[in-house]
Image 1 (spheres, helix red, strand yellow):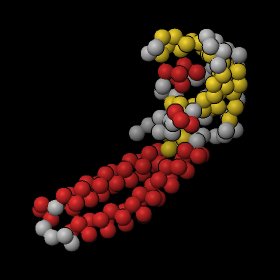
Image 2 (tube, rainbow, N blue to C red; image 1 turned 180 degrees about the vertical axis):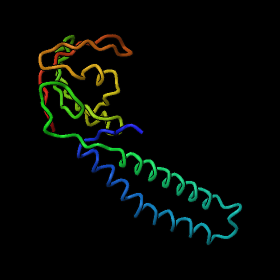
Image 3 (cartoon, rainbow, N blue to C red; image 1 turned 60 degrees about the vertical axis):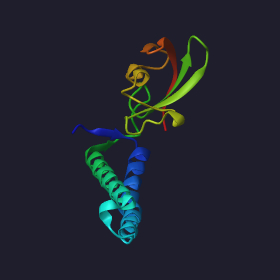
Image 4 (tube, rainbow, N blue to C red; image 1 turned 90 degrees about the vertical axis):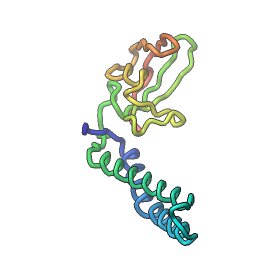
Length: 156
C-alpha cells in the first residue's frame, strides 16, 4: 500500500477514532449482542443479526484504520511556504467573481469540505499543487473553467 500523508491533526483524529472503536464501540456492540441473544432463538432474531452486522462493520473499520496508520507519514510542518504542497493553507482569489477563498490541501482521508480541507486528488487540489504566490491557475471543473490567483501560502 502506498504511503498515506497526514497532518498531525489528521493522524491524531484517526488514532482517536481507532481507540474509540476498539474500546467503547466494541463494548457497546458486545453488550447489544448479549442482550439480543437473551431474547431467545437467535436464528430468527433481527436484533441479534443487526448487532452482529454492526460488530462486523466495526471490526472492518478497525482493520482499515490500522492499515492506514501503519503506512501513514506525518507531514513536516516546517515545509517551505514558497509553493503549494500537501498540508498548505492556500488563500485564493476567484478572478471571475473577486471572491477570496481559503483551502487547506490534505490527503483524501482528511478531506472535509465544511472545514475547507480539500483533497490533493480533487480537481482544484491537484491543479494548485506546486504553484507559487501570485500565480494564476486555470482549473477545469465539471461546471467549466475557473481561474484562481494564489494570494498566500501558509501552514496551519
